[in-house]
Image 1 (cartoon, rainbow, N blue to C red):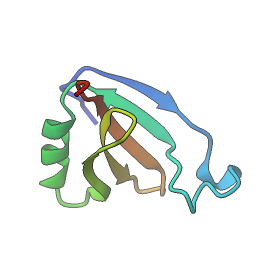
Image 2 (tube, rainbow, N blue to C red):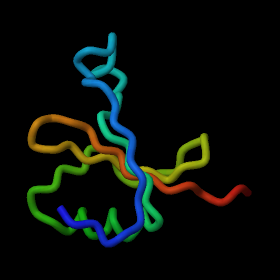
Image 3 (cartoon, rainbow, N blue to C red):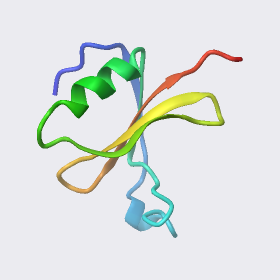
Amino acid sequence: MIFRYSCNSSLGTSRQTIPGGAERHAWNVYIITDDVKALYEEYSALPGVKISRQLCRQDYGMMEFDVMDLNGHRLVFAQPTPAE
């Protein structure tokens, strides 16, 4: 996969090894990008990309969406939102 956006990422442990991880939708990879909306629009248009959570603003100041990969790992793509 090639990213055309600036990004940082964090890796998590397997959701299966975290008590309650699958039930609370814990992520495996958290990727911070500089244009999450453009990335969401691009991925939404691709056949075979499973968007598991639509683009939405979070209370903790991030705009995020989730993708499930072919191995069942949850990838979260995020961008900080300006303070209101």
